Image (cartoon, rainbow, N blue to C red; front, side, top):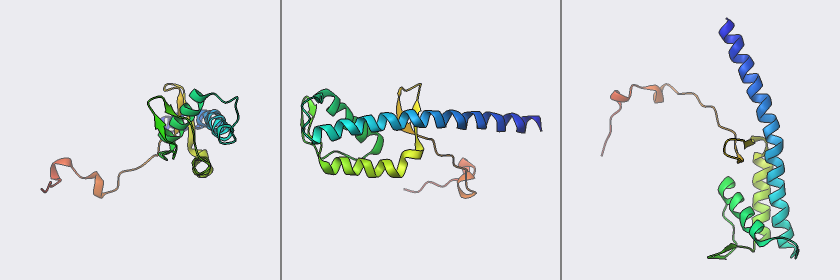
Length: 130
């Protein structure tokens, strides 16, 4: 019984920690969106390296590629479509974003899954067919 209470306590602490990390993750996401928006509006004060970094950030996190063409140095011209696609993704996934202190980056919360009866078979019983 004590083990159950400890487990519940640890899960509660972990969930509280994830909520705080969600705020930081959302801020980082929005900061990068601001960089993209500034570039689209031709703001002369936006740094090209930051634009390239923001594009890379979004592509890695969302798996949505930018339509921006690039060269050896990077990509510096995101499109309105890029911005809209990343914004739609954010609205759908923002509750699943967390800041990972170990990796020093934004990532998605891990999904908890359980094994179904069919996937819980003994590996030696699995038949491999060519």
